[in-house]
Length: 138
Image 1 (cartoon, rainbow, N blue to C red):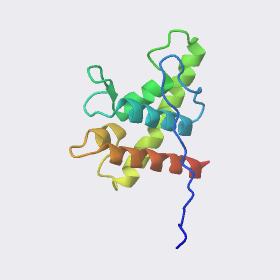
Image 2 (cartoon, rainbow, N blue to C red):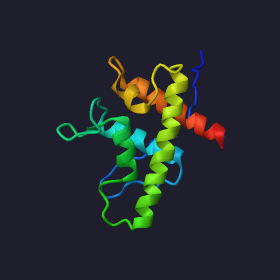
Image 3 (cartoon, rainbow, N blue to C red):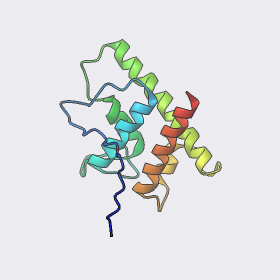
């Protein structure tokens, strides 16, 4: 009996490194992908943006880490403002995704992240859904 093989291509998320924050994100989709990479590498938490004891991040903290919002003193004021603009745009997409996926029961990404019983699998699915929604909107 011949063996059956299924070939799949799996997109690997980039590895987060303090010295090299991957590529500069220029779209919300890129920010969400980088945030997902942060969560996969560092771990996910609830109740705080960044747990410094465990080095885990919530979704919003992962967005901040993906954009290097608070760790880079090398940014010009214009670069920093662009990061803030991109953060707000990405956060709005995530909030819209959460509202849609919970039928309005949860109104924002922070509430979604911190809901009792939430798992990282739920978070990953929501982020992937946000990427799909952002692609469809473009």
